[in-house]
Amino acid sequence: MAEAKSRQAWNHTSAILAMLANVHRDAKKTRAYRPADFHPHRRTEKPTITKVGISVLKQVFVDRQPGG
Image (tube, rainbow, N blue to C red):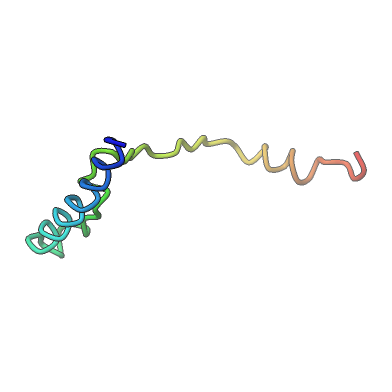
């Protein structure tokens, strides 16, 4: 219950911080801030993308035998 109250308070605080930061930013040099940029409870992990060669697509779509 205490964590929910903390999250609620940070939802409010991070929205205000994002608004203040956007008011004072240079729109030509930086992107707009989002409340998630200031929220300590939100995770900002990016998904991992694995690069593979075109041969994988060939294996999946071309070499696959029908009915197999």
